[in-house]
Image 1 (cartoon, rainbow, N blue to C red):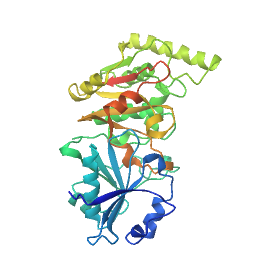
Image 2: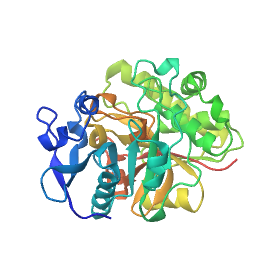
Image 3: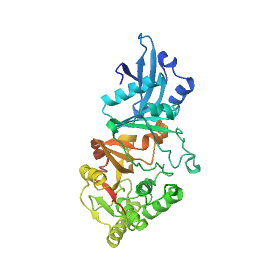
Image 4: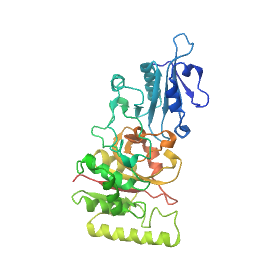
Length: 357
């Protein structure tokens, strides 16, 4: 890998003249069309052999609290730019580098050691038409030969509140219990309707809904509190009737044989469940670190690599330049995932483990 590169600040209001000489205007226009500042944008540049100008450059971004870097585009001498990004990623000990397919061909990506990502199931569908579709392709290169042999499909939730249902459907699709083509808005909303605490899905209710939908699957809930959860923003009657429903979910769990473990699931236990026991873990996290707002959100934990857990996030923030490439096969360092999955003042962790069946 090359070592003659520089990592420079990104400023869409003042492109360096060296960049303007090698990047097409439409590429720079797309780079500056959104506020990428929440995702630490930086330019990785390779100098000309004589030191006069740049031979190559790449725009690299990533969600905070994660273990990847994303090439939005590489310009100029593309192989040299990508080589520089890979060197940078290696120095930063990142688990992977992704590459959005705005301008790169599948052949060039493969030549650089990147594997293609499967297109999202919602790509181009009518229900997702209110959000940018993102690039028509994406690629990933894992560090040290790591990776996920049979990744789940990517499906973007079609509402602001159906993340729990989507993560459960993705887990069952990866397990072969749901055909990938059956993951659509009807399936998403139907499962959400069975699991919701209006509008969120709390852990026990979600676990019970999974058991109802797939009776032969093993389901276990971890929730280290007996109190209602996800209700901190509510008070009075609005809080009370949802608390009644959560107590009803506990009764449903006892009747249907879904165990609710009152211990806090550790990160060691989570990694073991995924790696050795081949379980899927639906995990509640706060989006404060990754997106800047403290909202509870379900993600699917389905793979482990050294130092990080690989998740599917069914939501991405297009306003910050995110696309499905960011949210699919997303590596989150153990320490980050540990912190972001402790919710509320009581630092409670909620998870639903789904085993084979």
